[in-house]
Image (tube, rainbow, N blue to C red; front, side, top):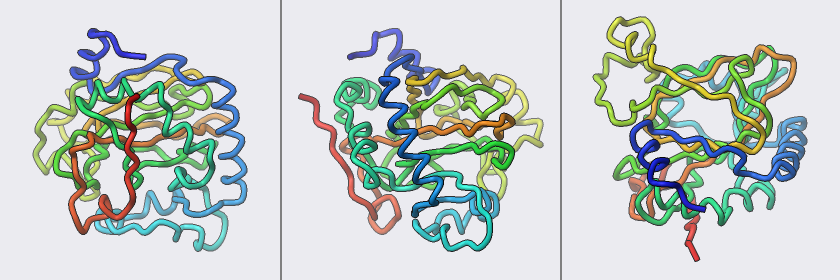
Length: 262
């Protein structure tokens, strides 16, 4: 499968693109069943809502996988981390051959999975999840350039009430000053300078099997889950093969998986 020229231009302009019904629904159900078992038993490494909300900028940069399961008491899992090595079904989806030509189009070169970032099952648990504030994923990543794209798979319906992704179109190409972000590097909503841009936000309800591609510098957010059912999604990140991780950083601490196109 290949993107049309119009789709490619849309991605380049907006920083995101929805691929409706890309993944098989039965595959989505299988992924979700496995993920729910890992969530039920809190199989590490995980990230909890407490960890996500409470971390300072510096702490989030230094986060070490596998520590969240040591938190005492009841915890709400925000995401299962390092899913590439959890189950062959997860790995097969991340290595899906049908999407590779598309990833090559949006990256402009052969894609490579970066195991260090995203590589997660993301959750919005009913009533206990938190809002995800406006941010750019690239703020904690360390690569030679920003040619990275995330692949988001909806395992069921996603909409405003359960925390569908929202984007600010074109924000991946914008230059921002440091005072437009707070101390945790979230895009501030309390400054007039940002209000007009935030008003341009957009979102699209997703159905099971829909895939969203989005650029690593695109501003995005999501509501907390106000429904009675969990929202579970799958996200991983690819980079252009020539885009090297900076030595000595977390981005370089994990293996990478090339995705050759036959």
